[in-house]
Picture 1 (cartoon, helix red, strand yellow):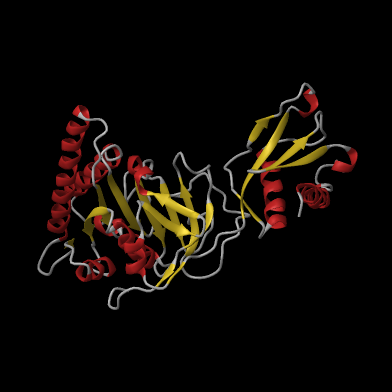
Picture 2: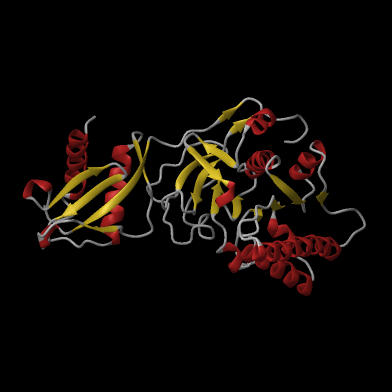
Length: 358
């Protein structure tokens, strides 16, 4: 389909769906136009107009166009109207609403042997889906959220296996479950609860590990002061089910845990110290707000609605985003200087790994 044909198709879709809502103003009456660009399309209103150009109109156009373009393009959901200026002297058409897109739809990776696939990677890039990967050199912290049975542990094992060759790992597993089995198979130490031990004692051990990681950050900062271009080995602190740590523990110990977590989140970027946090939800009881604000890879797995996305994507309305059906599906947002602002449908890779982990 040529750009001209696509423009006509979009105009027809918008005319039919919007005409009755905008007092009959359509492209046939020269009220608006559509222009295709490489990175998306423009809705060009002609002003003055008999309809209001606001967030509500933007979201209506998104709903219409996203369904009309599927599966050739995926529109990238924006939190509010995306205005762009047009290069023209005509004041009537000097602004447009921009709808960025990516070609095609999200497609799941199929990996026959996860360990071999991980060992074959020769960079710090972590593949997520077809045509989507994360450069770990440009990632601060990762959060994976989802209800029980949504596929969080499955996704966590994928990240652990992909990170193992490129990062040192500090593993914390309050449920003594999947991450502990993965660590045993891969010969790594994991901090987990033990019999005849109090919850406060367990969290105190976690705080000690976090304190050691914070000291590493301070030492690396001192090195960077003398050698700004020094390259460090990545260090990733992995905490499965953060909410299980902070609930039901002594207040002073919980506050110390939150304080250490916040300091690592704020200071870890330049020194390549990362957090990989997993939780059923990321409300103020699970992590401090300051930590949540430093997360730049956000993954929500499972049922997607306004309630489930309220903590990781507080400004996002998921309406209109086409979420694939199946386990290990949801939303992902990567906030860095490589990707445009985007919240994309996610399909966790399907992989096969060693027995006894999952």
